Image 1 (cartoon, helix red, strand yellow):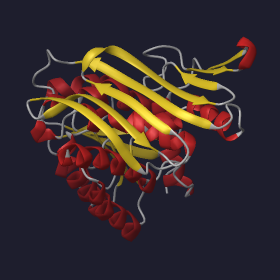
Image 2 (cartoon, rainbow, N blue to C red):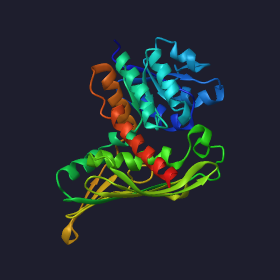
Image 3 (cartoon, rainbow, N blue to C red):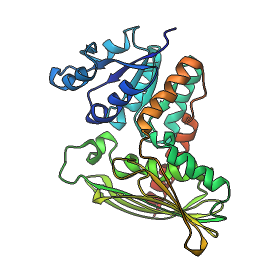
Length: 325
């Protein structure tokens, strides 16, 4: 076994070019070794990072190469399950961009394949690899905010001008809930360790068959959730956990150190405030390094498919509630 993981990227997606390929290149015990694309122009920025990069003219050609150990899949949402299964059939570990599936029950086949092959398969839910979220969970579990009564969530951006974007197309699994609902729902579940018991209300606006604005309220065993996701609002992100003894707020919860400095604010009685700042951490690099440790050392992957399946279950609950109205 090599002392590093040779990574291949399945497709020259913009997100892969700007975020994940650099993270793979920077991560310890990993190497950006391959890219599958038929476009020399799209391959050029990746090759600039790694001059000895192997470029394959098809996805299947890369999967057939025994030199590739793990594959990152940044394809449109509706292709994720198909290529995750193909990668594992080819003997590759696989990290798939979120959302891995469009319905929770689609996870079952991926989980079964993971278990049958013994390979590592994961969704790229990167935020839980960031230390600000570990600090948030630690503060919550320590009782720093007392009994949690509400979670308030917001994540928005505006891509209305980019009509060809896969997020604006129903045939590629677009919409704000599949794209960024995973963050507001998943981070709530990660910090609290609770699952929603029922959806209380939905207000969703659609364009071209995809949700572009969604307000959701939900009941959890010990608190209520209220959150907005939108692809038609000015960029904003915020997560607030409000208890009877304090309030915890993350002001750059999802695009840490890009949207703003990663910070956890703890608001306590008598105007006392505590601030925990994380200006240097990269959740993308941390994610790849955790994956590499699972491949090379057999370490448990810290965000297993079973966890992210629960987030898709909540999205399904929202969409089913909306359809039943």
